[in-house]
Structures are given as C-alpha cells and as structure tokens.
Length: 445
Image 1: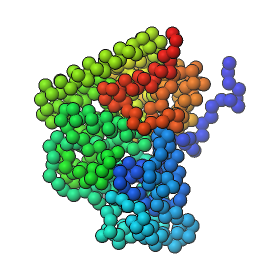
Image 2: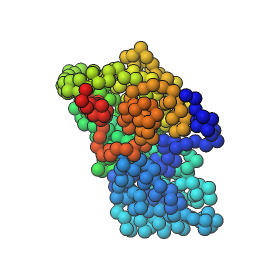
Image 3: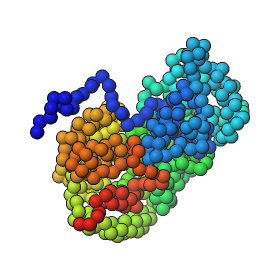
Image 4: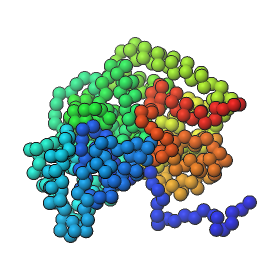
C-alpha cells in the first residue's frame, strides 16, 4: 500500500540529524579523561563539558566519565561578560585553584569556541604555571572539526608540548587510532591488543587506559614502531615520524577473529624479524582454541540463520573489522555498509577497497558515507536484511521497520548496552561477538 503524502519520508538538506560524534573539544576531553592521572581544565562555557557526560561518555556503552569528568571537571564557565572583557583572568584563577585542590600528574587545558572567537591568549596564561605543574594546551574550538579531530588535536598538543627525545626500545610499539569513547570497546580492545602482542614478545604502549598515564605519554618517543588502527591515527603517526623518526604501519582496523588476527601477527613477525616458529606456535594454539569454542555455537550459526544478509552502520574502522569477520568467518552476506565518521575524501577509496576487495564472498556490499541519521534510516529501508550491526540509534529501525531484523550495537552511540571491559579484538574477540549476537536468536528451534 502506498504511503499517504503526509507519511512519505522528507529530507531537510539544511540540517543534519544526530551525527555520530561530538565536537573537537569532546574528542580531546575524552582523550584527556582516558589518560589516567590527567586532570582536564576546560576553558569554555559551562555546558560544553557537562554535555559530554551524556553525549560522549554515557553514549559509549553507558560509561561514567571518571573521577575528574562530568561535574568534577574544572571549567571556567564563560558567560557574556567574558565574551566582552575576555576570559584570561578567569582561566588564571581556575588553573591556580585546580593545581592546589586537584592532585594530578598532568593538567590538560582544553580551550573551546569562545576563547578562540574572542582571542584569549591561553598559552600566555598557561606559561605562568609551568614551574608548578606539567601542563599542555589543546586548542579545540568546535568549528575545528568533530571529536575524531579532537583526538588528533590532543596528540598534536602532547607531541609539541610534552614529549622529548629518548633512546628507542626494541620491540616496543605505540597503539594509535583507537579513539576513546568513539570506539565503544576502546578499554577492552586496548587491553586485549596489549596481551596479544605480549605473546609474540612485543611490548605495547596502549597510552589510554594505562594506569600510569603520564608515563605512557612520555614513553611514546621510545617506540620502535607505531601501529595505526584507523585513519584517525595517521596524522599523529606522521607527526611522530617527523619529530622523532618513528616509522609507522597502518592497519585499516583492529583484527576480529582468527583469520584477521593471524594475518596481523604475521605482518608484525615480518616487521620485527620474529622467528616464524614463535608466530606459528602462538597462532596454532590460539586458532585451535578459538575454532574449538566456535563449535559450541555451530547449531545456532548453521541451523537458525545461515548465510544471513546483513547491514553495518559504524565508523570506518569498526565497519571494516565487523564486515570482514561477519563475511569471512561467519559466512554472512553483506548488503550495505554505512560509514558514519565522515572520513576525509582522500581516504574514502581505500575504505571502499577494504570493505569489498578482501571479502570471501561473491556478494559485495554497497558502501555509503553518511552522517545524517535520518538519511541512514531511509537507506536501511531499501534493503531486506536479517541482521543489523550498528549503533543504538538503529535499534528501533531494525526491530520495527526492517521486519524484526536481529540487532547488535557495535558502534557509537551505544545507549542500549553496558560496556566495561568487553572486546571483539583478537582470537577470543570473535567469540564474544558471536555470543552477543547469537543469544538473540538462539532459543528453541
């Protein structure tokens, strides 16, 4: 039956509905909170930081922002008076009181839109306190970009203002491109990645989530290699290469499941000249366990919903990882992949290749770059799928408008699940993804 005219979907090109990220300040703020021991100091309006409590932290798997996040974050709370007369004196008093009252290893001053518009000399104010405590300044006016850009700007500040030359430590790596909160599994993913690399003799500096945050930042120049797991880690890696000469290797995504994880370890084995016997020993043991446990979900996978058609709505890195695993390991059929992190134009052809050329399937997904949630909804309506891997914003669409398609939140925002240490990375990560998905349809057959 045709829709009545008033029920037909309408587009409003002058607005964007609910993009899957915050502003640049939100990304830098999340990175500062993820650096254990760092105290963020916001030079902004009062609502700028507190809004991130629900829009960034809580949206990332119902997480709290931590002991110095949310209402506990020092903020200059700029108002109309400061727009006219400037906010430098307010910031000066705020930094002074914060150092006195809030012990921290590092104080990260994050300036937002208002200071950029009125011309506050934030660097000059900060310079007055450098003999009292380590401070860095991240310039993140909202018009500078989205929260992924804020992640890059945070590293710009760390590299330019904090890091110093030091001897290179063999078989050590930095992990870049895993963006706190935007990757809803960032805590578990980084921990799993660190443990996986330890098995082949590589020490990983995960930076975020490490209980010695300032020490982890200071160790960055000592790495022999930087590993990049999304396009948002490329600019920090390039800057580190220019400043310290550290080479980097780019992976399009974190590895999920045995196939991608084995390829990942083999690449690192070549890079670090690790004996093939060492790599094979780890791979054989891990694959044996992973595939043995996969047999326990065999009936559900093969009988209940074999070769399901599916859609993915997520940031580029997550979309690539989930699509490869769902297609190459689970045997599902990709229909459409919607990339939501607004990647720069120069990276989009590469993302499309990663989403289509390395799939063990005759069917290749349609790849769309879209940030508007309304348009994403209309796109999904054009496909008949049995599974939707997306954000919690697509849950209603999957269950009510796509004929009751199975749904799993894998991307930001995720308001429908609590994520503390969950991870889909590595050999066991694929098992976790299967558990989370298949429990939804593994009832009586």
